[in-house]
Image (cartoon, rainbow, N blue to C red; front, side):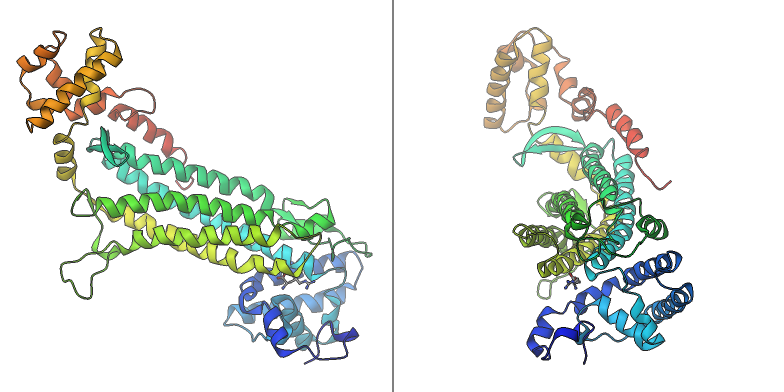
Length: 459
Ligand code: ARG
């Protein structure tokens, strides 16, 4: 088959080389973006009298026809035509004849592919922002229902201090809020048009790049043609934002796995989000959060992969840059699938209030409050810490909790203790007492939830 670039060649491409260098297998996902970019480019060529407006019309009609065909079930792609750009150009020429060959005037695949990627990521980023918003809403719903639900908070996975379950869940809301902000902010750098940069140096034709930007809905254009075709920061940034977001989701997933174990029994995932065992009839496995946790790995891999591809490249375009695509597609697909599952999984989980309550009653996570109590009565904190430490030790030895120890025993340790110490130790009061801004007190959590409601984009 004759190549679009075959003029200076005397031999056919080695078959293995053809297959090895082709990107059509994966960049066909850019078909619609590629046609949109071409439609705008050819319109501008016509308007600027670089080609006749009649020719521009014919080409546009041909492109629309192709777009239709693709949307209705696809067109045939061939490895011999290497990538989506040349496949579509070839189809266009087959469709409308040699006039189709005017489409590539004043353009290179280098600015074309970059434009396609910008268009693709722009569309996907908008979708992902909305999906993050859905997960935040699901978290918010559960948090609202669980402001009063108390469970042990952990540090080092050792019981630390009682907290509101709503407060714990809201921590993830704010992580995702930062992820959402990052996605929104990254739009500034995605929303820039490379087209018109040519191969690297611009073009001899008097094109109008601003017009193309306007037609495609880009906010601005690259001011430097070399940067325009060499820049993949916007993809790196997307991969990096996604990796950070997946880290958050992985931590939440890990907690869901732990919480749904029989040992914790804090939550139960809905049956529709779990799977069984082929051998053990009693099993209900949290496969979904496990896989979300695991899929985080591939998003890191895609980020590191592209960083490594780019790090040694001289300006401007190098074929290496074709390797930017599969990782990006994979991360888009991974994050999209993750967010779509996460929202309903959070919404449908059952919270086991009793197990949480039991956990928080049968532990020493109220010890800090007793130390703080002595401090309010005048004892220096360090001294109070030591006194309560001794009381906890005695309680452990006697297999008791702090609420079970007799008043006389407390008085033996310090005459600053009074009967009200037992109120201080109750889990609800322990939580309510952490009333500092951003703390776990029910009042503070409600305030936090009010603020969070203002961050939801979809009303
Ligand atoms: N398939 C190529 C890529 O994805 C398109 C750009 C090719 N440009 C070139 N000069 N070979 O990067």
